[in-house]
Amino acid sequence: MQRVLSGMRPTGKTHLGHLHGVFENWRQLQQRYECFYFAADWHALTSEYRDPLVIQETMGEMFVDWLSVGIDPEKSTIFVQSWVKEHAELHLLLSMITPLGWLERNPTYKEQQEELKGRDLGTYGFLGYPVLQAADILIYKAHYVPVGKDQLPHLEITREIARRFAFLYRQVFPEPQALLTEAPSVPGIDGRKMSKSYDNAIYLADPPEVIAQKVSQMFTDPQRGRRTDPGRPEVCSVFTLHKIYSPPETLREIDEECRRAGIGCVDCKRILTKNLCDYLAPLQERRRHYLGRLSEVRDIVEEGSARARRVASATMEEVREAMGMAW
Ligand code: TRP
Ligand code: SF4
Image 1 (cartoon, protein in one colour):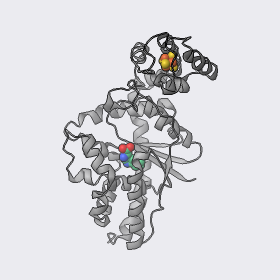
Image 2: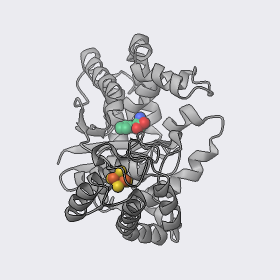
Image 3: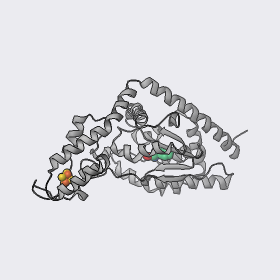
Image 4: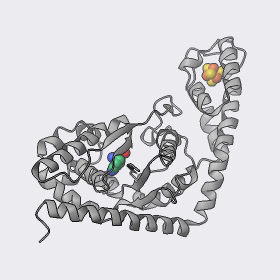
């Protein structure tokens, strides 16, 4: 079976954007591939090193979320990056052969520094972020890496490093390919892409009252100032969410009624809240289940990390051999 690998930085709570953009895809991939999913806590540290507590605080709930959406530890290997020290060794060895220019030219390097200003990201560790990511991927000889578009430059660097390794020594790693996620775009409360940093997110952990409150604040068609103005569902983020959570009949009805001012935004939002809460209810039930059994969750992750370590250490033997570090 071909191998899939992906990671997520534990830097905050999980929201609906993660659910539809990442987890539902991860869950599906389990049917066809041998999957490795991990918490990239060292990557989180590259930006959170001043207040690293957020990493520990987020990690447990992140795994709870994975299990609750159906990432199945019987099928997939779930682990913590820093519990598999081999990633650090491969990162070091790959850093010997990675030209500085590849890292300095990396577009996400400059973008992230711009975006996360207020933090000093002028560190050695942050520059090496893609080398660590390459180590994560190559150490499992992954064939496919499900990622968003923003991660494509990192994957390209991974492929270049794999080729350079093969050129300098011998082929140990297959060249991994990106699996671009065809996910619905999930708008936040303000209509921009849902993101923690925009403070516009609906979280998996939000109780129904909070969801109702957030939905009631959502931006709608800006041209629909009054209840009697007709609206345009195609420019309304409430409608975009309806497309995810409401059945086709409801969609058709809202589409029609909105255009002739037959339904008001308050009622439309009330329907969305109901459908969204119903959709999340079973997931939230499973979250509560796992949150009450955090030590079992920890056991699952420990077992996964042990399994990951076996694969990683076998690869490292080959790498040391190839690089003349096997005396
Ligand atoms: N950089 C990725 C992100 O921010 C997280 C990540 C770290 C990752 N290592 C990885 C993703 C390896 C895929 C494969 O989303
Ligand atoms: Fe958007 Fe619904 Fe209002 Fe139409 S009725 S503008 S779809 S919130």
